[in-house]
Amino acid sequence: MIKIKSLIKTYGDQTILKDLNIKIPKGKKTTIIGQSGCGKSTLLRLILGLEKFDEGEIWVGKDCITHLSEDDLNKVRLQFGMVFQSAALFDSMTVGENVGLVLKEHTDMTREEIKERVIEKLGLVGLNDIYDAYPANLSGGMKKRVAFARAIVNNPKVLLFDEPTTGLDPVTSTRVENLINKLTKKTNATTIVVTHQISTILNVSENIVMIHDGEAIKTEGPDKILKSKNKMVYNFVNGLIK
Ligand SMILES: Nc1ncnc2c1ncn2[C@@H]1O[C@H](COP(=O)(O)OP(=O)(O)OP(=O)(O)O)[C@@H](O)[C@H]1O
Ligand SMILES: [Mg+2]
Image (cartoon, rainbow, N blue to C red; front, top):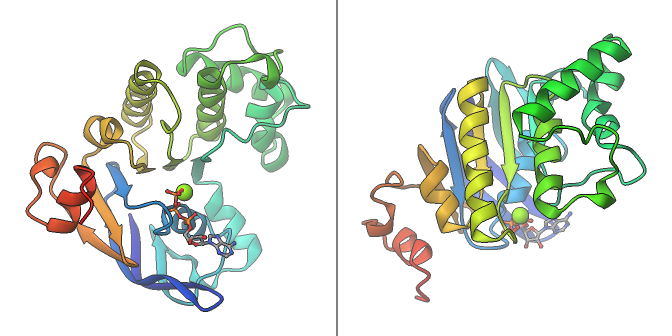
């Protein structure tokens, strides 16, 4: 479904992604792991077409997004739902307005249709009766769930999560991991989760890729990764300093 081919990304004289090759299977949850600063968030921004890369190709289904115009990119982007590293809600807008924004701006849906869809998605993430609340009055875990509702409001084919559990307590983390599993099952979306939290790697992944030194290392699945035969992967998931 998503193919990254020989991708190179530089910032100034720093090469972040050197020769990155990843195949993200359709309808499955792929976790991307790797040390802080290895380029995980950058990769998500490149897949979304929010930034340009130096060389290589990114394929989303049948679309090669490498040379698309901004108009065509916008069409591809509508297939995506993204949860950013911070919840990134607009404080001046209500929960309902935040979640429905993309539908208001990019579809012909009426206000009533949008409200109905927003309430449906808030219900899916376990949030009822907060349609008119403001983000400032919500806990961190609730904001996260509002961000999830916003990401799925346009029924996306691809869901991207950037460190969805970082900074949450262990119980809230488990709830968020269960929610990711529930949402992806319900929507059949191709899902990419960027994380370095072990519980999330183990609870969510069907497929794990590690980025190291600008390249992708294919790893074992969640049942075997803690005993990985690859030394880089083993050291990373077991927190060992080489
Ligand atoms: N806009 C930018 N301009 C210059 N350098 C950048 C820019 N964005 C990211 N970088 C650099 O690229 C590298 C990769 O950053 P990125 O945010 O993708 O890492 P990450 O793997 O998501 O890290 P973390 O786990 O801490 O979130 C870092 O060294 C960062 O400083
Ligand atoms: Mg990041």
